[in-house]
Length: 349
Ligand code: DAH
Image (cartoon, rainbow, N blue to C red):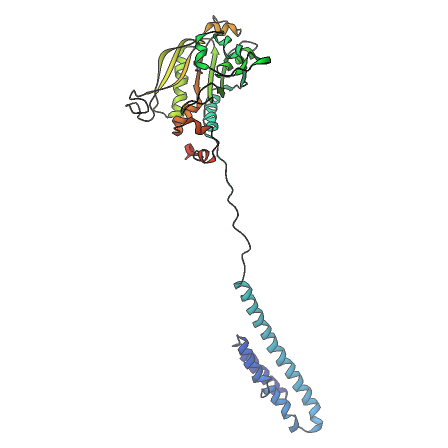
């Protein structure tokens, strides 16, 4: 009987190799432990044995039955597990949602152009000097050679504050920083500053806003000449508008400089050939400049026999409009995000 049992077990281990599905298990069960199965057959044959043998044979048959059952149910478990795993894998749900796109901010074109000027001048040894937007009449005009009643004040019709601060106004030009820088410099030594900032005038159309930005430059030292001014402005305009840009001086008048010049650059649109933008002249006026007037130096404590200086001032909005091709200054101050987004890293591409 033991041999018979071993035989059955070996056959089962052989059969089980090709068992892959639950259906195979059903067939296997019926072959071994079903009603007509081989193990069940062994039980049925018990009657053929003598009564005294039956006990021992019965025990052996039981062991065979348990072993066969174990082998089959282990295999059944394996198959069930495999089926479950496959199901779990197939039915995996992706519970993650695509994240919301993070909106990256972009610098306002005025911030970019201001920083570009600042970086350039800082690289040439200048300091960025900032003055207040609410300024005294004295600093904004009188100490720049524009006493009360001076006709050149008309060009800068601005916002005065009344009552207790009668002599104060929203500065109409960053040139006021010249006065502040000279007065702040108590040892009256050399100065090299740029002052970017907001200025205010009673203006309003496509190219003029009541609030706009300027950048002022002031250099004071011994032996400063127009050549220094021209060289500096050439470097500046090439940096901002491109290497091919040329600069020309035309005589002009500003109360705080002598001599004074109006500075033109070759038209960056047509390269100087003549187009609608430059009104066929090939040149575009971009800034005012000159040698600091001796009276301006004197009024702020400098001896014009020892020190000379040059100064310049330009509209940063105008520069941004040229550089970024902005047709209407009002969009610069309109606070529309769609406008600002257009300049996102444009000149870094
Ligand atoms: N402040 C002048 C303006 O707003 C521009 C200017 C002209 C500034 C000549 C200067 C200068 O420093 O020397 O129109």
